[in-house]
Length: 440
Image 1 (spheres, helix red, strand yellow):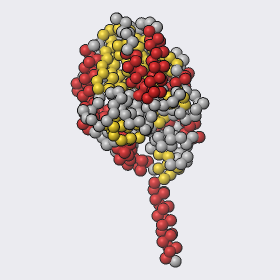
Image 2 (image 1 turned 135 degrees about the vertical axis):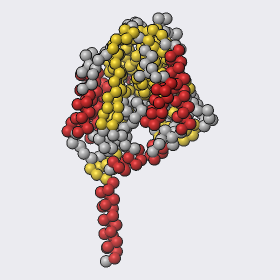
Image 3 (image 1 turned 180 degrees about the vertical axis):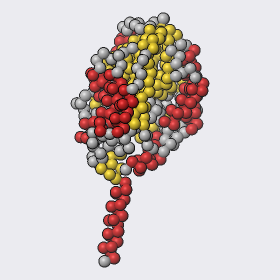
Image 4 (image 1 turned 45 degrees about the vertical axis):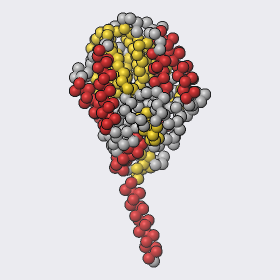
């Protein structure tokens, strides 16, 4: 009898433990959720008025490499230490009309704590800058040291305050440089399809967004300053190769800048959430051939670009999206309770999306690995607009992909990395679509 009572107590304890930590995932339609309804209602109330401006543009770059001999490599996971630097990491900026700054770091992402710190420094040193558009190259061979929670420290390395301060200072240096070389320019949007360089990482034969999209600014000497985006993950350097590298985004920038008419090139990760590079192989050799194939084509594309708009219609808005409670899946239909998730990774009650308009071109920053399939769908819905989605704006809520993947697929983007539950693909699509529908 004693043995049976002990077994009963153990079973009862396990029942309460499971009840306390696990629950069923709510698959009810996202359109019925209060956070969805309230967020979209707020978006509909925003004033979409643009201002007409002559184009002035500046650019800057500063190394973000810490003054040390050994570096923590982060990407795929926290991978350990290395002393090998294949190509140095930097912060790149483009300053538009002295009040809007595009900032991209050669890092896997930037986290809210760092974004808050660097924004404070920018506001203090450059109060004329009103709009800050953040992203990263999403290299998987960048610096660690960004985790300020239990699990984020495990995944990204414990937060390195000294490194954060250093990169903030280097950001300011790059902005100072951009102020000094600001000049009058014209603007053009450019896109080039590279369908053989990218594939769907969830289903090989599913949809991709193959376009390399660029903002091209041309000064009076016909020198071009270019902001590039693409949807393929920066993962051509293999995960077992312990080096610091910018991967293909940095190497494409380098090759473009060797062209006599391109004085500056920078890159922001686009809709990388369900896309990866497609090439014969992975590794350093493949990285070089992949990069050359893209860069050689782009040089020809950009050389044929005509100077277009010296006067632009411009606006910049930040919209707020409320969120569901975190949903960390342990099976297709079960999740950890949100309080347990929050202990390890923190909890976002809301996130922001920045939307920058230049004429009929829209740069839209997102707090996630956004899927290129969403970019593709939006450009189909709005054929008279050039829509560019970028990832990693300084908040992070995991992967946002089309909702059918969440229901039918157990790939890690749908399980371990989709943190706020079913319906978010539709939610982000509807939020952005609602905004764009109100744009003239």
